Length: 139
Image 1 (cartoon, helix red, strand yellow):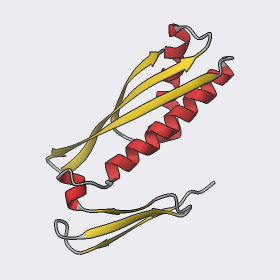
Image 2: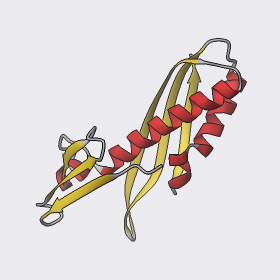
Image 3: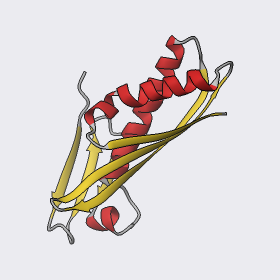
């Protein structure tokens, strides 16, 4: 199974601009230096990585809980992706997942075990070489 996305860039780093899109058409957005480094409205690569990680993790957690006999009512995951300047330029140094879930009949130990397993094994976690931390709460 392949998923495809593309990016187009024109101009220099600070004065240039780009377009990022997915083959499905669900994403077709502008991006720029100002959006990535200066807080201008719009998307940036780190935000897109965060969205991919949060959605992948939520699906993995749902599967793991299902395998353990639980059906989640809801799973809400937020990903905070940290971009830091380093000697070699910039690095994505950490990703922190904040997870809140409503799961009838689940206890804290079963939930934490499932969340830790999902964090370690969702495909996006596996592909990222950043420290990934998490706070998981059963509501």
